[in-house]
Image (cartoon, rainbow, N blue to C red; front, side, top):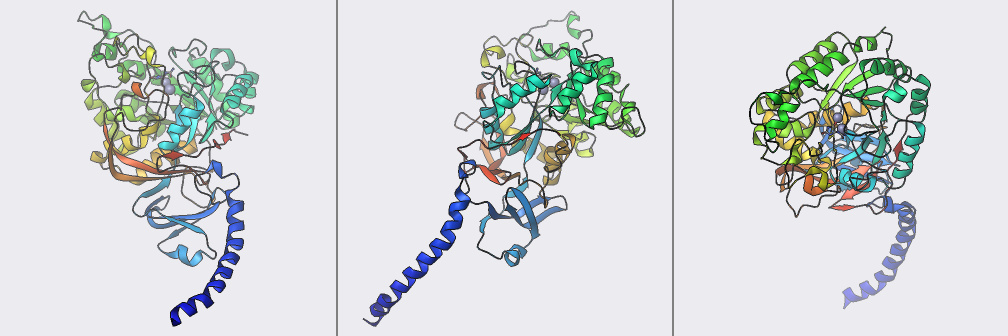
Length: 506
Ligand SMILES: NC(=O)N[C@H]1NC(=O)NC1=O
Ligand SMILES: [Zn+2]
Ligand SMILES: [Zn+2]
């Protein structure tokens, strides 16, 4: 009896307090939810905590404070509790890893013009689901190629309001603009983060290959802008295919013979004949040469190491498919594995891993280069005629981790290869680290959680059936992806609005 009397007296008081609190905090959360379709989290100011946060100072247990899309503090242990003055949302991720979002400097999103191959919406959805927070789009495979301010404008129009993660663009260095410094300057002024060229046919008619003079001249212009040149370094040479043996086009080894290591070595040797100009005091100081998707871990890599030793401004990337697969295991006619340069033998893959662990290869990229399934000729299985390009965008983090564990890969190395180094290459100094002042571009993932990449696994890029990674068991599940503080992917869902930013150099 006494108890219920007390209840009757207290209830109105509690109701009053509750309504006061709801006006006070409710109005704040109303403000915070405005525009929240960009984010699955209705907060602009929050903390995320975990036992494993990858920072530039190593792995810590602690918390990261995000406010207005930026990381505003990173604290060890329970200190966040003392620093937190108001009722700010805290998400405790427990043992899951908090790491800088991945920066993929090499992806072909094929939009505009070939959006039936890929596209900004599908490509950036896949990126978000894979923990990639920044993509730099390659200038070819879209139609037209990005080789002028006008064609860059078409890219920007195709990407605007359709991207879930941040997107920047490389421009093309092609014979048409390479010897015309004002044409190149206008492309760089329009905002491309750097240029890309091919030393062999690219497979795309409106993206012709450059010779060494084009590259040398291009570097002088890039020097003024302090932006890099990315190079597909293979050069056409005699094929080993005419050796009199059976050359079945459905055999992967036949394809491998058409692009031997000498193609990479020859191109890299030629390319490195002009990189001395990039040295301090050189005539192209400020320019930088980045060799994309290295496959040959022997002579080609030795040449790169030698050039670095002499002070040339040179870096090199390889891709998860070269680290995961070997020529020996590629099934007959399985053209999902066709790419250039080709996947080589298992012994070469071991050497690539060695070079990763030694730091001789600087970073990783996806080279996500899809097409429509018809051009992969999956039923024909003709390696010589099928489109060359691997589809991997969503899986690069678990692939790197799953195949790297046996070599002792650390979380810090993954963050260096996928975030720190690539963001520096692209000149994106607000990205690539969990540190105060950086964009809150963050992936939260569970390295120990295994999953099968089967038909039941949600895949967001346009053509899952052409991915060579399908059927693999991987380790490393992405839990949440934040782009500039917006939770763009969480618990298997994407934010409903595409609020990624365009990254234009100025
Ligand atoms: N055009 C194009 O995307 N080519 C890419 N595909 C590939 O496997 N290597 C490449 O350079
Ligand atoms: Zn390439
Ligand atoms: Zn590519």
